[in-house]
Image (tube, rainbow, N blue to C red; front, top):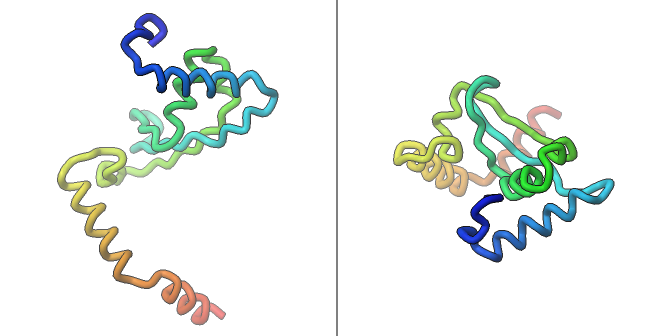
Length: 117
């Protein structure tokens, strides 16, 4: 991106520039970057914060130190559509989404709290 800026959409570059300016502050207040992966030796997927990471790397890789990273690791991550997108993981996500929509989570939580109390 540094060497071929003309190939990148101007609005995207403006967003990265704006984020890069945030890193100049003592407290950039940009929030955490969320990563997921199988384990600590395999590649990670950025769930949230990809623009912040790119902006930090473009301005100065040292700026990555000012970002807080949260990482979730699981050997079952390949079942997650956000980690590995394919028909199987998308089907699992859709099935779970429908199942959750059909349940009433507030009622379920209240019932669990009653049982615990």
